[in-house]
Image (tube, rainbow, N blue to C red):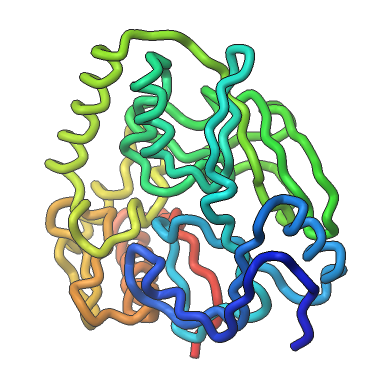
Length: 295
């Protein structure tokens, strides 16, 4: 495979397992970390949409299948994680962790970002899936975002143009999010810290955050109809396939108990879908992204 000339680095047949929260999955055929957005644009223009491209974030809400990922897997590194405060707005690189932005806002007495402390992953991933927790979503705080398409064109989208919906958006699929611009509301650092501590305490008591997990497996259907309740009702709390199991603590979390494969996890999720439908007549929708090829 001939690759575009770049300033960043390529790694062939690169193991992605260690980068994911589940610690499962195959290798990337090619792994690419661009130096900056110009390097990324140059790669995309030279590629001319020939090689397939997959975007990889913090590896938190994802299952990489055991056969790995074909083409080029792009990961935006530290150079894409800056936080700038300009004219009552925050401009945040897409690879910035949600947790780090929440801490920055607390230190600078900026309110409205407390819920981010409870969402694993990056800002880019959060924007892409309109991530939310504890009554707030990305759509509530985002002004606009900057992205680049697979042809190498830089593009900007306002909140309205993104077309946010529950755990998703209406954007074209061939976009790599580069930056997010948020509105700033001043608050009190002590109050913000207290709310963040509340969220952290609630998470540690109700979610298996110290396990090899991937966050919520299925999207909730409504505020009142929670996926975990339907899974529990179907008698699947603790259900196991291979080394993959449904969490005893929170039924909407799957756990790798040590040696699970991606197939174990995906089979478990598919089984849960089937049993919940048989039990309640409700079809659960995956929230965890599953990418790559089976063996």
